[in-house]
Image 1 (cartoon, helix red, strand yellow):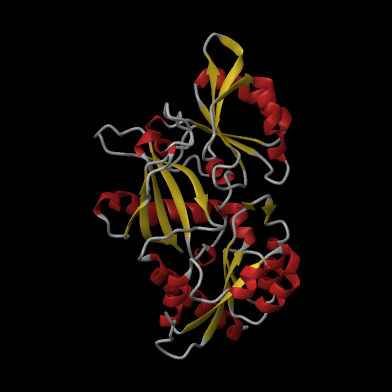
Image 2 (cartoon, one colour):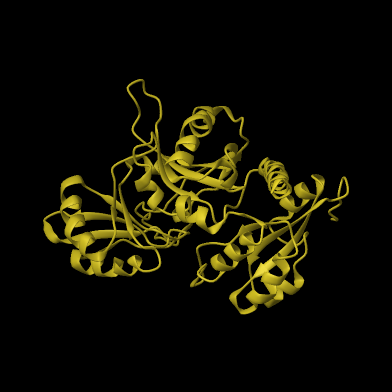
Length: 359
């Protein structure tokens, strides 16, 4: 299938993702998972080129990015042991040259990390949340909190795919023991001394910087709602019955029963999610912008907020608890999202062009 421009392109965008030399050499707009985004941009008079990144050929990527008007980045914080420690400075350099980058690394460090759960705990999406800034504070404050409040969920500041996310609870009758379950797929519950678990978590104070501690949400088995955003507007929803942090079935953590359900995608107008849409667009996103000190134009072109169901309110209506924001690599996306992405990119590029002409 060829991707054709509906009108001549007047802007050029790089769509960047991680891969090896073979993937970089073979990449085309048609042979990757972002093909619908390429199509939407082509229809919006924007040329999009594929750019595959790895640290081993970062200089070639830099030279390529310096030839475009903007960069749309899809790279996880952690992938097969690699982080964004080298990519983020490269993107900052590109942005400093006047090239628009989404999501900018400095924006990710504000909203795409688990610390956002602590900074926004006073929002309507907040819950019982704490932050530990170093191993000493963690060892001092976490054990009494666990004993006093019941099961907790600990999260390293930067990560994806359940890496560094743990459900922790006391073992009844055994004061020094805890039962833990990692959120990564296929994990099994473990019982071990609390001190041993605290030691295991100390590495999270390195690149990530802190550990976030939230109360476990009892309605977890009812699933997670992913609210997809393009800038400040909802671009769709996804609902999924998840299995992370739930005990594996008798057949074991690798059985079919232990696999998460499919994520059912919905457009932004889906009736079951209109209350959440109003909260996100009218209340929580404006609060996020103000609290984090970012402007609306710096919000990622595509990002998502993952919600669990909180306690029902006095009228029996659902409430929502934020469990993370994904701003580094938000994919898969609803069918309606590529058009929203293209529209947001066009607006951002026009604003950037106006700012440059006005200087």
